[in-house]
Length: 503
Image (cartoon, rainbow, N blue to C red; front, side, top):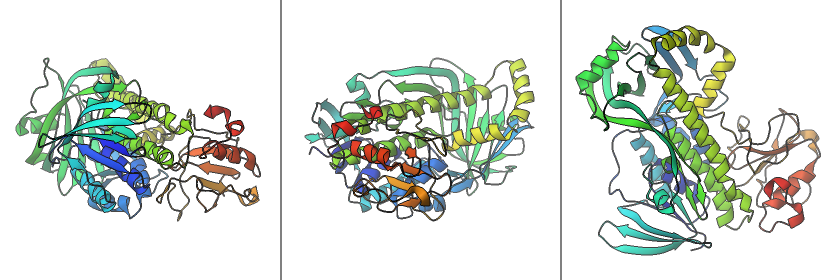
């Protein structure tokens, strides 16, 4: 089927992509070689921008996740017992001013239920054995758990198959970066004596390495410990008693681990694929980028890869657009975001693992002042919550006038408005001030939401993408550039109306 999509990897990224494509009425098949789902918690953080984008799926999806999870509204940083910073998320302009602590197994369960309600079932025990892409599609050989081989034809293939991506290797794409030398351990525990309410998490900096504590709710916590360098192989995780000793030694003296639920150890990789797209094949999530868990953004970044790609692919697969720039824009937009997440999480990790006593002393003396400055706090809040993610250099950006938001910026709907990109078709949204004048006849076609929304804040006319980022902004009455932009992504764009940025 020339318009069908094969997604390989049925974790949170693959499930999110399949859900988005299915609600946009694109034929999709989702496979994974695992024969059963993991029951351990693994990734536990859902940040505001991810919840905003999931809200577009309708049916109260984000609200359901919020009901299941634990809202954490404050981040504390200590050096031993010395307070360094207290960062609150309450002032972030979002319906979800918190980080939601929810085990990955629960996030996956909810996504699976939503996907099955749309008639798509993840096929477990089915792995990709061979892929042959060409100009018109992709031929895939799938191997079932019983040994049966299946050859099938698809319009596109999306690699959501993790850090050791079979598809990335098959295409010969490089995964550039480094493996950091320090070892880390993490686990889920029941605890008593935690000196914070369950809506706050804490990081303790220490010369031996940091300790990070996330409350998962119900007396359950995620603990991450830096262990320093060891030998060539990653050692097994410490015994529970060692977790207890290390946590207490690093500043959390009153906490008692009462029950161990799960532990593991790892090393941090900072790597990114050199291309997120190779013809009819795209990469998303850990198949495209891996980085430090500092900030808890790995799963979120991957899920946002999926939501960036889905609306563009849906427009093309359904014949609503033939503009090559839509699919071409996925790589530059998301590769820039991936690079920034790698850099920012790496900075947080290096800041927390300084080896020099002099450097640690300077850090502990300076940062309480620096992190207390509102502009610095707002920058850190935006980075952590991913609400500051933007596409300022996107090839999809049209013009921006001097007032208001600039093209590529995240747009927040007004109170009571539905999220951008909701429904079964990926439509752009027009916002206009009362003095903008009526749109020209024929502008509100299949690519545009039929509801013209008000723009009382900055005035002018704004065109918002289906994923809630600003495509272009012009002054009142300047409908011609808007019409030209939409002509450029219509099913049969006239050659003389394509904006220069689209060529």
